[in-house]
Image (tube, rainbow, N blue to C red):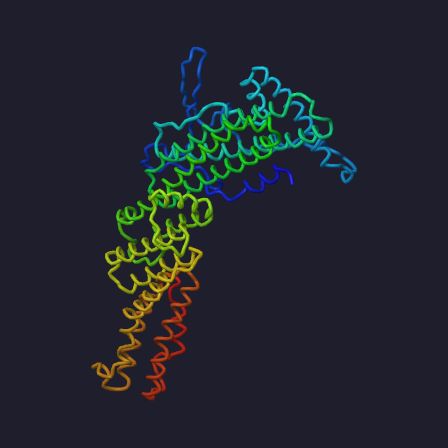
Length: 513
């Protein structure tokens, strides 16, 4: 399989930022305007006199804006054939296209070798539609939070697409180059080592954008939501993965081809390692922000919506974050392992991995805080227990591994709900000392009155998960129906106001929201 195919298969993955449209500025945001904002970037250029100029540009400038992936710039277009399409050797046409591209590239390599370094780079990258990477870019420090957030996404996505184009062109052209060397000998000019110098210069021009991405990520720290932290972490992971895979493929294919080529790859290898280390640090800092910010976000919450047992926004945010952690298990567990060795991350549960331990701590901490805060949020204890059941079960269902402590707490919450909600309803039938039980009909009348009152209050309470909704209904039925049926039999009441079957049907309508 060609190296370019391996790269494409590895790189095309789900990215948090790739499916989201640009965000509109909220009313009162520091950027103002309320409309869709285009990211900006600063372009630095150095004149012949040595003066450095920084110009702020909007990304909607057609001249310098990083463009979306353009497949026609990577793969040659096959000629149109009106008839006998089945006889066309598509592979041969594509290979011939890459041969033509390689011959053109060899001319640029010779131009680069002869001293026109920047000119050769500009021609090659402009033909790939990624010439903008030659302009050093920095975030606009004066921008507001939303605009900086957009710049962060803009830099990262544009850079990854450009790296994909460059890597594929390098890999395919070098495959053809090596094939020609095998067929025609190694005396053809220019040398592979000279091509390697052009590649190294290109990659060194790409790396400053990593610093710009990291700087933009650092400036988004004033966005405390866990969902925003998860999104930022995923973007940094995507950039790190793209750089790691592309550099590994380029280094393994190009700089390992011969001893003379190997000697030219040292600077690139060293600089790539430095940028990957910076990305690791940025990812660790994002995880630290997430861990230390959970308590603050919960404490700053202004209260839960009155009368709602639905999933809290903090719960949803934490789960969004843990999904990103779990989806990138090996990369992040390695970063946590390094932090553990530095003494910056404590890990008390030696039976699980660093990342699993972190997720468990995050979930347990969130559940503890919601349990504590809910005491002031809910006057109705039945509704409070239902809220805790919903949120705890939501986390347990989505963490993708067993959490016995959380499972036990959910069982406790269910028992607590039954105790405060349905135990008073059953008390009349179970306690013969209750004053209302002087005749055989009075307890049943009192029971049905309390049943209808509780049912009416809770019918529209919400349990969003179907499995938990079914579980709760079953628990209520098992508590209520056998006792009421037994009371009817013991009291020889043949015509109750509402039969046990009807009561069970009514309980089956609870918690639809």
